[in-house]
Image 1 (cartoon, one colour):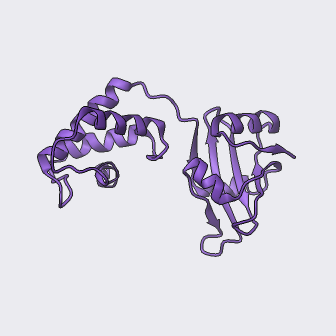
Image 2 (spheres, rainbow, N blue to C red):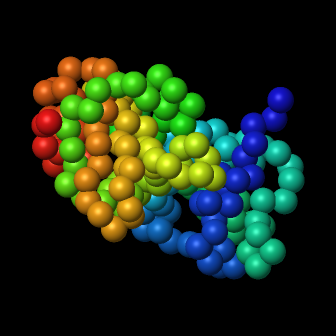
Length: 190
């Protein structure tokens, strides 16, 4: 099965003006942002694999307004820039799908984050999901910390009201400490 590269490549080229060759500084910034995983939130290896697959596909890669040769040049240089920066560090946190909610639904609330879910979304550049979907009784965000701990952030208040539950089966003290250190968001043990 072919790797579904187009969505990844579209993310990488969307805001770039690829009608003319981009400079090395731009390529480096994109590579650094991929590694930081702030704006590009999927694993770096997935983007690398997608770009490599796109370059080898023989298909048109460039968007309608972009030049094909310029786009291919940018992507080839991006792969080299990522290779030069390897091995890539593990991100401080990553999101898990809402399918993990079933496993965490009954986890104890070990802390409270004194922010709204919207403030947390802005800080982490990750989005809460409604659970159940479309109903929105609660909004959840499942995180796996770089330390290996998994937690759920659960917001059940109105959007503008602060107070998000931090739920986990892992050790409460070390999980809350790691959450604060890795996300920059303080939580109050409860």
